[in-house]
Length: 159
Image (cartoon, rainbow, N blue to C red; front, side, top):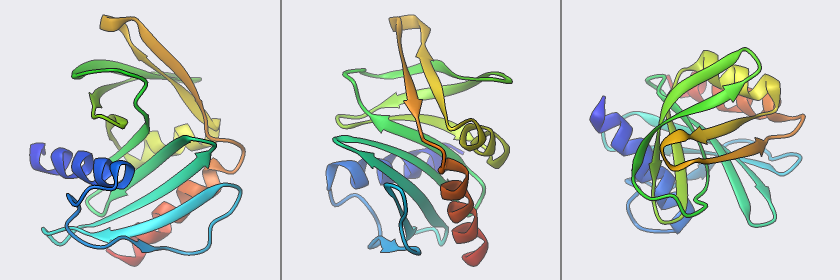
């Protein structure tokens, strides 16, 4: 699990920072819409990483999943440092996750497909890191479910 998590984090960082960490070239997966774009990327271990990116100005929100079912959401890092117990507040209640910070990204994981679906159906979430008294609302818009469905299509196409 730790290797999978680190792969997710490394891939998210490489996407955001433009570094060479990623193990393979990202390829588009289908046409984008309403600010959303989609990619697939083969990992060294044979898994495929599918992502949906929502770009609004300088803010990039990501929903991503590996073909093994491990998922995450990510936002631009607002200055958080380290790794923290955190939660994503949803209408149906809070979800406990780990927030891991990198220079340009703040990643919340691990998430399963059910939790990602809840986030998409609600059109966003509020992340909270109690220990450092930080939180923020993430608006994924009214096409978030369509965007997540494209991620699931990518997963199915590569499984």
